[in-house]
Image 1 (cartoon, rainbow, N blue to C red):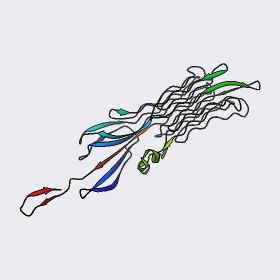
Image 2: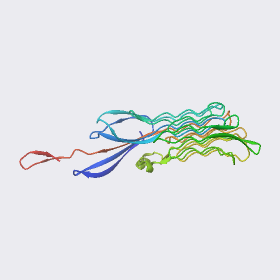
Image 3: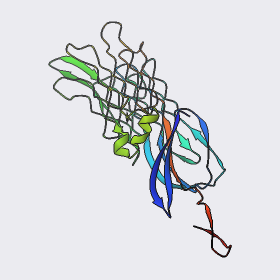
Image 4: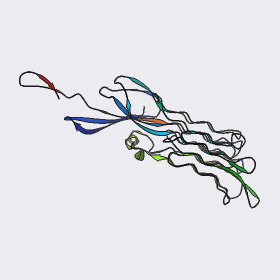
Length: 305
């Protein structure tokens, strides 16, 4: 657990209700306080790893806010913060991110970015992984995202432009939009990762004061080939890692940022690894109303207000 923050709320029956925020950046247990019967939860799952060999970017972990979850005072609830998926190697697909959960409520980890040698298509997840370029001229699909958690990954593509072969991975899906497709017919560049989302947009701005990243859920950028002028895909805002290049000895994809659920970038060559996905987190919010003091009536009767 990384921190607890309280805010005074409205007066209810003459007693101030307090909104309390709790930020969990690693696995923990939430003990339900007295006088609390429901909580709101923000769940951010682990981002996926990018693929290898001009691989697709990893998809962001699923992000969703849940309201009014019934709880029992004094109960202990398991809080799990999903790890990011490993990047793909030897031309293979990146691993999906691990789910985060609050008790039985959870979201999906991000979908792994496709690899050019095996598993060209991106995997489905909270947000889907980008597709990798095919070995021959053609396309590979991005993985599907999950409704209310994220968006699909972009298309990976192998193509010939003016007798030159261009290979680019699709961008991983982000929380706010799909990953970008590899360019078709102009630059041949890989796709950028889909953008993430701000805590303010989600209604959880107060978590930033406890150390939570203010923008989360960016998709990973696609890796690119060796054709002149090609540039790797950039990671989506909110922790998405940039793609690598196949030029020279090649370069690894950049890892997604920790505790954003961002996807890792696709790698350049099959000797390079895709970037690992960023880990997730949990936020909890609850309102508690202290028991009001007893007052004594004029005839000695005790009245609770």
